[in-house]
Length: 180
Image 1: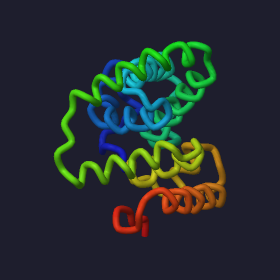
Image 2: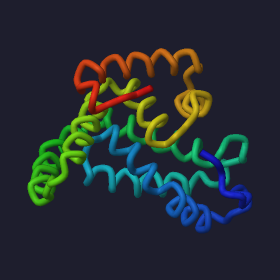
Image 3: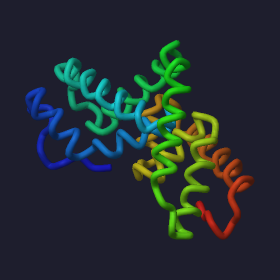
Image 4: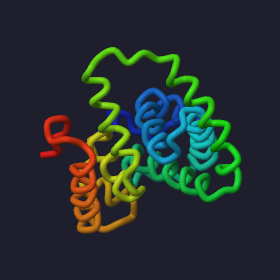
């Protein structure tokens, strides 16, 4: 991931939020979804993350890439949410709403079905393995960037990636998924 050529530390809070939404909004939403597995909760948490960024904008000093800082905030907010009692209450409601959304959508292409199987397998990985898969393959982050975002050593990230690949190979046929 590369920063926009603009110096993001000089942006006002409003400009920063607009920049983040334009450049990283979808990526951050995908990461949030990988934790909470609910479109409705993802939207709620995404708004909360933007509010947190707005409030903490003065603390961003530019030492790390903006995307790294934003993803760290999003991941921490997801983890806080998953530990909260509110999460348990919303599970039943969100499950019902997601099922309704799923039934409304048509899946007509075989490739889409294969991708869904792969995505489901990734979402069913343990969180630490899922996290590295999402950050590497969806966000195109390097091992070093993933280590920075997660706060884990690069060697730990490599181990988590190997474990994730191993678990995925058990659940998805070779012809559908190549990780090399």
